[in-house]
Image 1 (cartoon, rainbow, N blue to C red):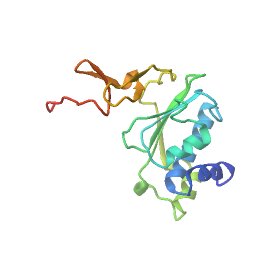
Image 2 (cartoon, rainbow, N blue to C red):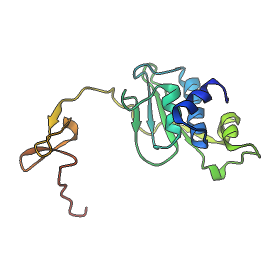
Image 3 (cartoon, rainbow, N blue to C red):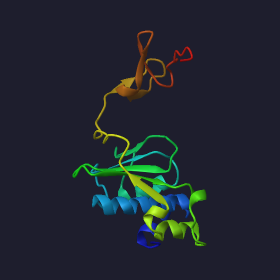
Image 4 (spheres, rainbow, N blue to C red):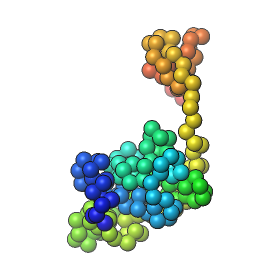
Length: 175
C-alpha cells in the first residue's frame, strides 16, 4: 500500500502519519465499494466527521473538496467518513477504531493500517446522514455594517439591516 497512492497523499499532506494512513485506507475502501476512482465533479461525496489528517487523504485520492462541494464537514470529532456515490445511490460509513484499541501486532501503525484486514481497524456501517444536495450557486448579499459580501444563507436581519454572521449580535437567553 505504500505505493503511488500513498506517495500522492503524503505529497498533498506534507508528511507521513497515522491519520493520513486512515484517510488513505478509507479512500481505498470507497474506491472498492463504490466503484469510483476520482471525483471530477460531485459524483462522489464525503461527509467527514473530523477535520484531522485523514481528510487530506480523501481530498488527495478521491477529489472530494470543500470548494467543489463534495466534501462536507460535520464535526462530531469522530474519525468517521460517510461516502456516497450519486450515480448509483450506494453509500457507507466507515469509522476507525481508537488507536489505543488496535493491536498492530508489533508492526508500525501506519503499515498496519494500510495492510491489515479492514475489520481490525475499522467498522463499516450504514451512513448516518442523508445524501447532501448538490452544490448550488447562491446570491451574495452585502453586510450593511462591514460592507463585505456573503451568501444569502449566511446573512441575518438585525434591526432591519442585512448583516453577516460576524457582525450579527446574537440574542441568546441561555436556552
